[in-house]
Image 1 (cartoon, rainbow, N blue to C red):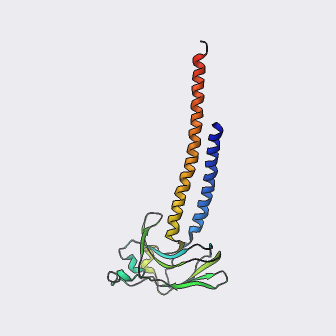
Image 2: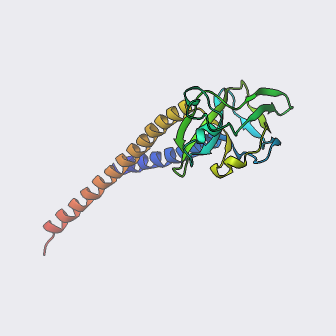
Image 3: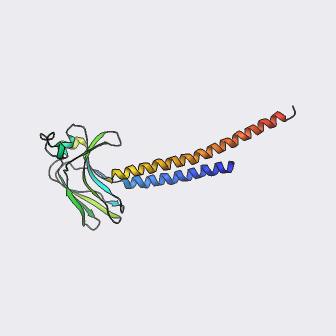
Length: 216
C-alpha cells in the first residue's frame, strides 16, 4: 500500500508539471498582441506576433469604462445611436493584418453595430469593439498596420488598446478542460495521501500493540 501511495502521488506530481506546462503554452497563445493605441493621428505598425494554425482569434479595441459614454467613443451604432447622438466617434481606425512577406491577410475599419462589456485582469470595467475574427490555415508570423484618421487625446485616459486574442468560446472550452484536469490531479494526489495515512496509522497501531504485549 505504501508503494501505491507513492505511485499515486508521483503520478499527481507528473500530471501537475504537465498541466502547468500546458497552461504556460496556452496563455502564451491566448493573447497574441496587446498594445496601446497611439494618441496622435497617423500610421503605426505593431510588433510581430505568431498566429497558430486553425485557431480562431479576434482583433478588439478595448477602452476602460471610466465614463458612461465610453462605448459611444468606439463609434458604435445600432441600439446605441440615440444615446450616443451627442458624442461623436473618436476611435476611427483603418487596419490591415499583414503576413511576414507583407501581403495583406485581412483588412477593415473600426466602428461596428454593437459592443461588449467585461472586466480586465485588475477587475476594471472595460468596453470593446470587435474589428475582426479570423483563422489561418497554417502558423503565420504577422503584424498589424493601423492608420488613425484623428487624434485620440479624448480617450487617452481610458487606456485604449488593440488586442489580438482567442475567442470567448475557446476560453470557455479551455476553462472546462482546465477544471477537469485540476480535479484529476487533485484526485490522484488525494488518493496517494490517503494511502500513506492508512499505512502510517497501521504502523502506529502495530507499534502500540507491540508495546502492550511486551513484558514490563
